Image 1 (spheres, rainbow, N blue to C red):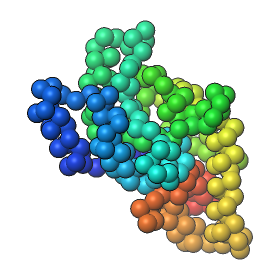
Image 2 (image 1 turned 180 degrees about the vertical axis):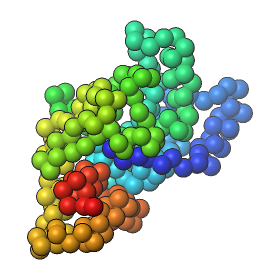
Image 3 (image 1 turned 135 degrees about the horizontal axis):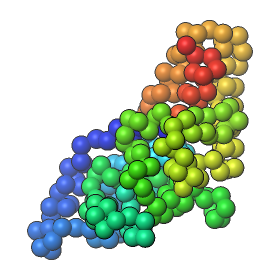
Length: 232
């Protein structure tokens, strides 16, 4: 999973919250944001910040009008499970519902409960012990990948996240494998290039970076497999 490097709060978001408080005499909540023009602008800011990939699975997002192919994701849920979290922990989650550092953009998963993943699968689950934010640098070290698209957990901290986000769903495995195979056809049509360490590192560098403001789909999986199998 790629770390999302959070930008400063967008000026338009700061202004919207300030104007709301002046007009309504209270701080805005997420329900006040939904259905407004600011909701779409905020979603666009999050998608651009993430290089047009889901904050969890790294599928492409932001391709539909009004960014309707993705959701604003609250890493700490705005409706936390009170059966699991303490009252103090629930309050922390609720207070973060419009905290920009807690907001990301997630894909909508797949139709059908059995194949669902990411935001829709996670729902209101959260653990202060087990969850690592997509904005935390540590997120890049807890998962590994096979060339068959399989995700595996390198750090015990990722066990619950992988399960609750369903990051090893059959659909995601197949999509990751297809992305890796397509990359190999384009970048290593000449298989001898796999033995050229300098060339492999250059390809890794390309997939670690945005091109035209976008990351490649499943870029973390591609980079991991190249580095583990042919990198330095």
